[in-house]
Length: 390
Image (tube, rainbow, N blue to C red):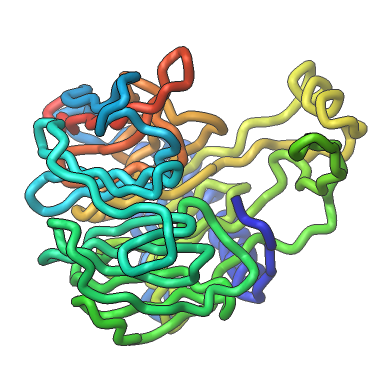
């Protein structure tokens, strides 16, 4: 959970871009059933999708559960708190368990191969294991949010390098960290309100950086009482469904950004250029009636303080094939709205099991790896095969 929320001017710029793009394109596309692609002055491409799948005769892809890892026994697959996931080129699954300060490695068939890491301050040890990312050809990057350092392992768990980092007062669990299609590592550095792109290998060679696209500025908040240990404290929280800025990296090494209040995502470079906008002709659902009153009563505010609409988007994920998987509902994910590498709307792809938003699910070309909870909230790592033939 983020502990501080700074605001950058880039967030306001994304919000402005979204509004102008949406208002210009919706009027031209309403009632149409074909994707419209426009190239604007300056080169930005705008892909405007009707709210109907463009999957073609093969139909919308489906997801089928093919692997489940987890148990209640005191064994390698009995998880405590799964913080982060990674999958290497051979299909091995890496599970970062922050409760045990361990990384557990499983074969593509789900057999426990090895574990490494432990609680501590020495090389290969963790104070708080906050995230992992796999970087070809053979590097597992880990981040410790308390010790403020990156540690690089090989697939056997051997420490290859340790890099102290000045992370600053903010934190995110799991930590935003990606590897693009060219093998570059992208890490969120809150102390500098930025993302930094590093080269391939156990060294830490900075290539470029970009300002962090943070949440839109707002003073709307409410105070609630929370139990901490044996006492209660006052905690300030944001009003539900207020717009925020979402972001993730894509395989090209660029960033997808969006304002959560409207269904449009923007591909931007580290230099700040917007290359592409992808839209879906769908409004955010209205927040009204009993649901609106129930939310207001639950948090102790008047209903008029709530926004008129829910969010159109909750989060953005990408796969190595350039497909974009968008979460639109709060809580565990039962389906994603999916766009292909061209920005064409493929359709709504349902999951056979609810997938937790955290740890972030990992999308491959033919697999989705994530965490699901059973009826007792016991975590399991699952893999879902992407069936693209309908």
